[in-house]
Length: 287
Image (cartoon, rainbow, N blue to C red; front, side, top):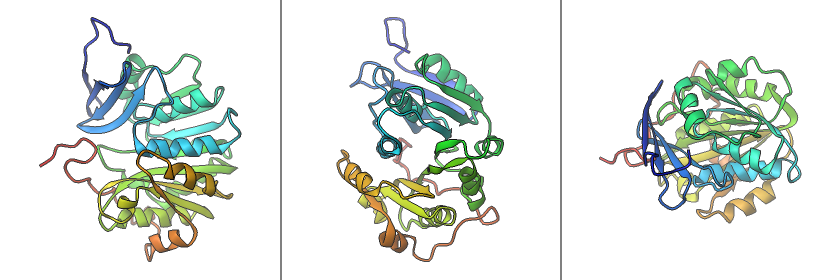
């Protein structure tokens, strides 16, 4: 949606899950912020898909960069669409990659196809449906990367938080594949600790990435949880994350065990939605 004289500066449209708003970035000529019901969902720069505003997407991009030799195509499954920021990044940095994006909001998909279309040569297939249900139909041992980044409003649905869900993701991955989950939590981090335990119940190699203040429970924010059957590129992840504009920390090994504490893995029988972020978080109105 390149801006011009006749292009509205802000686009607001009703979608299946509420109100989607695309607002221009005043600092970048063809970049847009997607909000859904007031919650900031994605930042997309159509001129430069490698420009990433959100910190958690930067963490995921580090993983993408380390997933395979530079430029080598990968097969990725994205559960949760948003503005397709990470798929656009993969298409730009790893041409000929094949990607599937699953988004439950069909009207949002159509809005993005119309207003913020991916590059024509990007091999990004958009599928409308529930993330877990669509994933259940995916073939075994297909994807190098599975990213779970699903929010209904500002909360992750309960059925996308369990061991059974993570096992289903693992089934679709090649032996060297990596599972990555973006979640939100704060304060005592009860939910985040349980989610780390859940991923650890499925994968031998696990890490949690977030800003130190979030890991200490001082504020609410994003945590990225990684899981794999093979060793993760921890040394490079630690170095790259420490060099981010808002430096992060990678919990792994003994520090991960300490972080999880006595938290139990979540099952379908015990699953709950992620906690609500406090007012003022992720663009939500402040009290």
